[in-house]
Structures are given as C-alpha cells and as structure tokens.
Length: 261
View 1: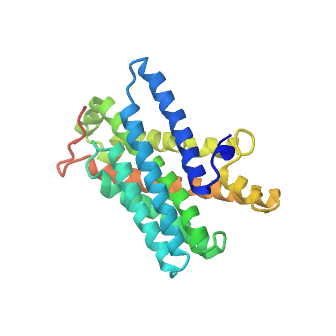
View 2: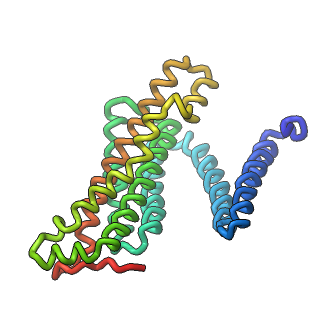
View 3: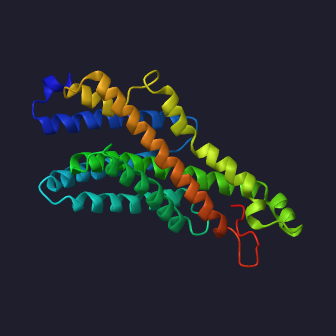
C-alpha cells in the first residue's frame, strides 16, 4: 500500500520506518496498561537507532571510494561503542568498560582477522564492515549478559563466596561456579540461533543474497558460516571477559567488592 502512495524511494523508506516504529510503540503502550513503562526508553532507542543506522549507511557510501584501512578503523570504532553499551548493562561491576573493550576486541577481532586471512570473509569494505559488525554486536550482547549474570549470581551467593574466602579458598575458586553459569547463560541465544537456523528463521543475510541472484544453496551455506562465526566471536569474548572480570571483583586483600544494589 505504501508503494502506491509514495513514489520517491527515500520517502518510501522513511514511511516504512515510521510504520515499523509505530508498531513497536503500540506494543510499548500495551505494556503501559500493565504498568510496565518502557515507552520513553523505546522512543529514544528508536530515534537513536534510525539516526545511527542512517549515519552508518552514509559512511559506508563514502568508504567505497576510500582506502581499505577505513574499514578496519570503522570496526575499531564499533568495538569501542559496543564496549560502552555492554558496560552499561554491567555498570555495577568494577572495571566493566575496560573488561568489555578487551574482551570484545579479543573475541570479535580475532575471529574477524582469522576469517579474513583464511578467505572466508572478503576484505572489501562492503563485506568486511557489515559482517564484522554482526560479530561485534553478538559479542557485545553475550558479554553484557555474562557480566550481568555473573554480578547477579555472586551478589545472590555473597555469603557462600565470603565463607569460601574465609576458609582459605582462592578468589578464583570461590566464584568459579558463577563464572561457569554466566558463561553458559550468555551463549544460550547463539546456540539457539544455530539450532533453529533454517527451521524457525531464515536470516536477512541469506534473504538478501537470494534476492540479489545468489543460488539459494550457496546463500544458505554462507549464512551458516556467518552464524558459526557469530558463535565463535561470542564464545571467545565471554571466555576472555569472564576471565578478566574475575580479578576486578576482589580487592588486593582478596575481599569481595560487589555489593547488592
């Protein structure tokens, strides 16, 4: 219906974005009837999301005419932004931003570099930046979940942790079960994506490749490659993040620093 009313491609895209945003806001208003207030946060997120993705599209257009190192610079900037977003989720964890930045850079950066060197991902800006951004975003989400779950578990079992410390257990031993549970919980979305691939959902990358003329089987295999890379990026990020955060929650005297909110 919109394509009949709006002929200009740019205006049509904005109209489609407006309809999608209204659907999201309608859900927020339904939640408000149950006294769940997310409409303000959602509105800010919608405006920011549209502005940010439009800016990225404009930057990518400029990058097509620039040197290849601009793509690496863009991915580095995304990692910093991802670390800041992840740290906000775990804002009660000491050193959350530093740990998030190191973990996301190590996890997603290593996977992107290895896949590029192996020829799995092309190094051209139009491929490297979009695929790399998906890996960074998944690493951000997994890292945020891991840190938040770790903090919640340690705070909930604070007495057990402090009792173990009082009995002479090393700090890393006293929180080891909570690190393990946070790691497993953070990877549930990535594992579920692999399990449901092609049955529950057909990701947008595969759909776009098919629409652009790529044989469906080739597009399906490349989509699997992307989801597998996402899991590798998320898993490596969480391994690094949970290892680094372990040292941040104890003082030099081996006292637990995390407090209940």
